[in-house]
Image (cartoon, rainbow, N blue to C red; front, top):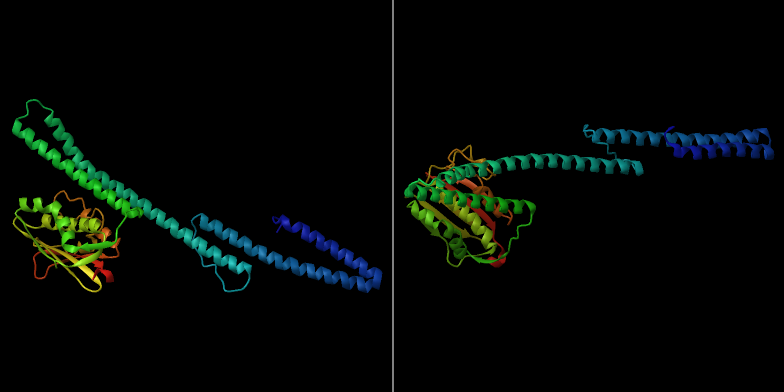
Length: 337
C-alpha cells in the first residue's frame, strides 16, 4: 500500500474530514454528537480504505502474474464471471497473454522451420555447385579430349538447368508462403491446360521411351488459374516419369462433376511405401523410392498450388498395381459447367 502514493491525498483528506466533522458536530450538538459524527466519517473512511486495499492487492497479484508470464512462467486461467471492471480486466489480460504466448510459440516454430529450410536449400544447391566446380576445372585443361569436353559441357548444362528449376520452384513456394502469388480465376479449357502441362516433359518422356496417355473430355471447362494449375500437373507428370521404368506408361485422367474437378496422374513404377504416403507432400521430403537427385520440392509445390485454390492433393497406390496414383481435387464453380 505504501507504494501507491496516489492514495496519500485521499487518506489525508479523509482524516481531515473526520476531524472537521467531529469539531462541527461537537460545536452544534455536544460531545456525543461529536463522537457520533466523527465515528461515522471514520467508519466510512475505514470501509473505503479496506475496499481500496483489496482492489490494489488484486492488482498487485495481476502484476506479479504478468511478470511471471513475461519471464516464461505457466499460463493460468485468471478469468472470472463476476461483474465489475476488475473482472473485465482479468478477462482481457487472459486473452492477451494467451494470444501472446501463441504468437511466441508460432514465431519459435517459424524460426525453426526457416533454419531447416535454409539448411535444405544450401544442401540442394551445394551438390550441383560442387559438381559444376569440378567440371569447370576439368574443362579448363587444354589437353582434355574433345569427346570429354563435350560430355562435361553437357553435364554442366544439365546441372545449371537443375539449379534453375530448383530456384524457380523455391521462389514460387516463398511467394505462396508470403501470400503474394497472384492466382487468376477465369474459364479454362482442360485440354488446353493439359497441353500446357505436358509440353515441358514430352521430350524427357520420349527419351525414356515412355508413353503418355491422356483421357479428358474435349468440352470440359473449369474456373481457376491455368498457369499454376498446369505447373502442379507438370510436377506430377515429372514425378510419375521418374518413377516409371524405361518404356513405361504415364496416364492422365480428368473428369468433373457438379462439385469438383479431378485430375489423376498414374504411373506403373514400384509404387509408394506405405510409411511415406503421409509425408509425400512435405517440402524436401524424399521417400524410400525417391529418384536419384530428387529435391523433394515438386510434389510439395503441386499440393501448395492446389490448396491455394481451395483444393487438395492426395497420393495412393494403384490397386491392382504396380504403380502410384496422385489426385488433384479442385472446386468446380457453377459457371464452369
